[in-house]
Image (cartoon, rainbow, N blue to C red; front, side, top):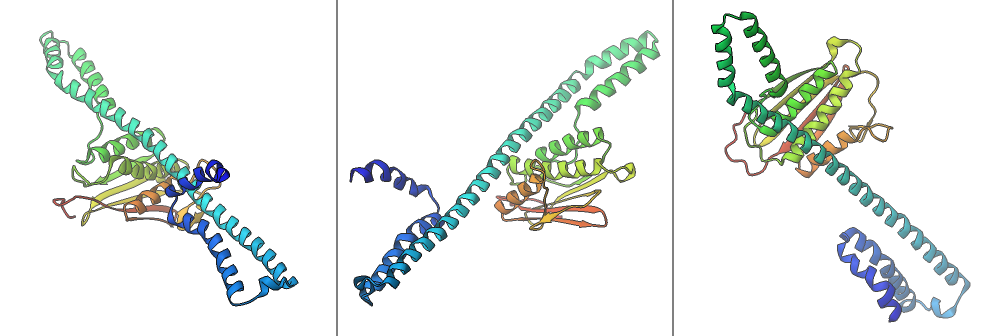
Length: 304
């Protein structure tokens, strides 16, 4: 009793946090043992005769059961560890994207402030005009235009999260010489959490822009993205040209490099979580990502 309370009970209590598959596996071993013992004692007298065959059979059976249990249990632990690793990676990416969204929101706020101060700019320009200094007026207008272009995100659609993500990656694409062609027709509310929406779009656009930036022919450095709503489902398609070969595993691109290939798995996890789906296709040097994400609590969205 002391041994059970001291060393066994603490681990038995933790079983309530395990899933049904693990519990069935743990209890299968003793149940199998009792089934074998019951069968051999009730229907035969082999255990009482002590024959060499039954002794060797019992030893072999115990070893086989042990190895089967060990393999299945280790497989279960590996699957749980892999799921936990992906979950942690998703959380890290979501935190990173949340910071990027916050920076873009701050830029929008700065743009609002500049618009509010427009009357001061007009007063200064009026002063330059009264003095007849056309060159100062031209220089001031040119500088003001540059400042506004730097801080004002492009309005791609009514949804704030999608608009901010597209604004961020449009700027990122320009820095690496990639043209981002966007067609987004979305309402203000989508019924999808900002983190899921941001993670799914960001991973798709990040992979597409990275692949397009590696193409030597600058005319092919183009990424096309379209977003729309149809029957309470968000439809997303991202297309880009690429060079080299894309290896696919279980229908999704894979990479031998440890830090690559996770974006597509992340998209699949989000799609499966929302009971939607994501497909990855390569044809004629064009990579196409399609996502269908069902939305929740949507009753008045336009159907396109």
